[in-house]
Length: 88
Picture 1 (tube, helix red, strand yellow):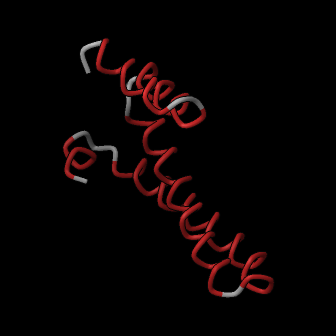
Picture 2 (cartoon, rainbow, N blue to C red):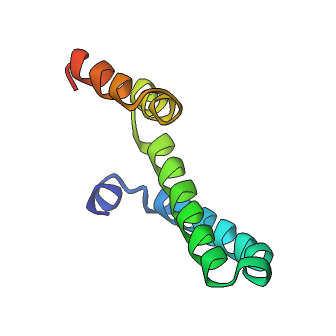
């Protein structure tokens, strides 16, 4: 939001939003005929996730982004402990 305006990087936010839009439309086309409203909700969650990951990748420090992604696939307590022990 306001950080992007002050940093004059509003286009980056638009790219993350457009990625979410593209993922949502593509997944809706595939999932709604088979799963109906459940497919629509799953595609929305996945598209929000894709947009959030892209935003994090663009705006965060590299080590913090890697720690967040790694914590998704490992023990959740490890990710928290890693960040806590490194002063975040």
